[in-house]
Image 1: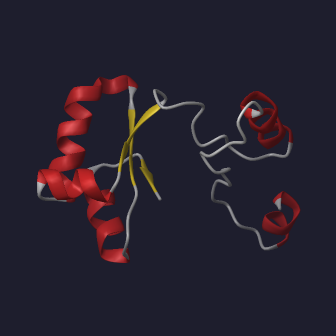
Image 2 (image 1 turned 90 degrees about the vertical axis):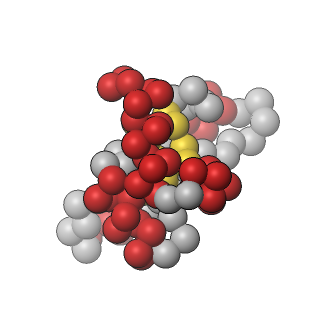
Length: 100
């Protein structure tokens, strides 16, 4: 995959799924690193991940990101799982570190 991305001069970050095979997390995360991909996150504590239910509970993408940044402090990245381009743009404007 990395070779394909290099051929098209893509400068984004290739990240593996956050889901791993039970019992194989360490091996699969290592394979991503060796293959030139990012691990996305190692475990549930690696970042704050906002999904549709979190966005609905807070009422807006902006509010969800703001609360998460405040609660997580400067050491936790905030990722927003978006369902549309508009939602991704709102997440970017709100300061989300990762948009998926």
